[in-house]
Length: 144
Ligand code: RB5
Image (cartoon, rainbow, N blue to C red; front, side, top):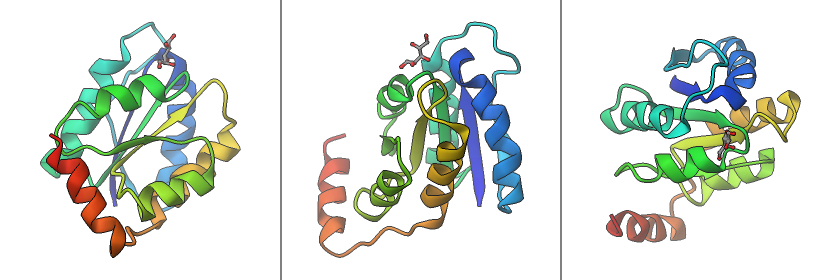
């Protein structure tokens, strides 16, 4: 799978840890920055990953900031994005099964690297369940 990833300064270190892990899982990683932990604005990086996913340049997106919240709020402003801010692998699985999330946002400050690894693994390996969830997701998209 092609995975576009980005962070802000608060998520930079975790982004750098997740990149080789994603590659180890067999995914192709597109790193949209930043290249250092210098202070940046997370919406700029959320936009890059969101546009990769919507354009088809990437299959899924991963965004890391201090909490993951700002990244989710920003990414969800881009039409076609269903970004879920997730703090456990179980929620990552449900975000895929029920919500067909195409971007996951995680916390670099409050969630461990070990848990974030489990989150992105679950996010990338779980299919949308469809069925009764399909109509609900269609209603979400109709809100755009
Ligand atoms: C940066 O200080 C912080 O606000 C940002 O990383 C993120 O947590 C916002 O939601």
